[in-house]
Length: 451
Ligand SMILES: Cc1cc2nc3c(=O)[nH]c(=O)nc-3n(C[C@H](O)[C@H](O)[C@H](O)COP(=O)(O)OP(=O)(O)OC[C@H]3O[C@@H](n4cnc5c(N)ncnc54)[C@H](O)[C@@H]3O)c2cc1C
Image (tube, rainbow, N blue to C red):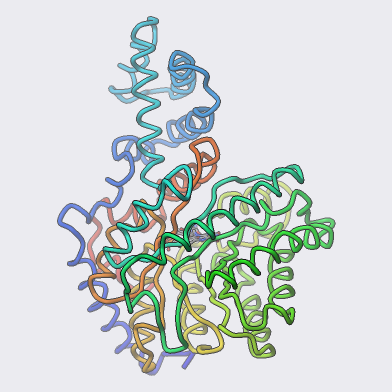
């Protein structure tokens, strides 16, 4: 039932009911998930574009600063670019004028950045993240661990990243084997779902991923991906391949579908890829994935994680600079409608694929749940995913209502985490962001209205 127009009213009613119920399950102060971020910085940043740009540049240089004094000087430099600094910033800038105060300011700024990063980054190593992962599991939330480390430029870095992924698989599988059973998180109609779940970036598995020579990068990455898949199969773990910017999309998709078609992987491990709904051609990409799934007898089925996409600004700038047509939707509602269309197609395609809907947008999430129920699907055959630090309250509300929910948990040091952090900040201070609209107190009815 890909066109639900006949049942449109029933679907909209169900979305309102489910969305309303989930919202009522948020803790009382959690209608404002931006509090999970540094609320003051976020409020200021979202209302002032120049300040926003300055803060982003500041966050970017933080790991490179050698001392607190250095950090304070940078902060002052960046804030100088803001014409009418709001009062707290003006005070900070005055403070930065003498050395003692500068040290104090630097310490406060460094602590602020670290505090903000730790909301998103669960630990420096898989071992140090285990406490948080276990606590999530106890609350009914599964996890996928992402090892931070972007922009691999040498073969040594790629080897190192692959080794870190492998160590994470071993470490997590060993620890997670001792956790108590949780049926909702570990089984759907198709069969068992691995506890251990690691998200992998192909661009970190090879330094050779270039749009002008995709074959070399694919071959190089495949050599590091295969041992990971083998080991995951032995350990009963899941490997999820993240999707990055459009220039690597074809190579990543070709690589994943090719490698997973190989005989040795025909019965495992559990694996998945990502579909980005902000891309105008995502419906064709989905057709390709579904055709692949139809043509290959692989078990367990491929998991497709549906997201809107994290590189929207980047794709727009790239296309504008080169004079290309923009590959992403430029109107948010069009992206949201496409997300819903893809959600319905994915849910209709089960059991050929497993479906994971990854969004913090209550409307997008409620739509997936409502449509699944309307076509007679079971709740356990739909996974919902959030980013740690952004979707914590939504995850708790979903878990408390018996849904399978998984939090994406980055692990790594602050330096490696900066690119990740900046993307999350950019995303959430955009005027179009659902989380920002919600934190500004927009009416629930408007938040749940059809896009
Ligand atoms: C578990 C998990 C895993 C993820 N993995 C990936 C991944 O592998 N690759 C990846 O790219 N992203 C990934 N993401 C990030 C995801 O793409 C963003 O979190 C998501 O786009 C935010 O969407 P939302 O539905 O939560 O919020 P919403 O506020 O509803 O949507 C925001 C999104 O809408 C889009 N958008 C914003 N403005 C416009 C506009 N003017 N016109 C059209 N579209 C617009 C952008 O994609 C923006 O991020 C993942 C997210 C989660 C939760």
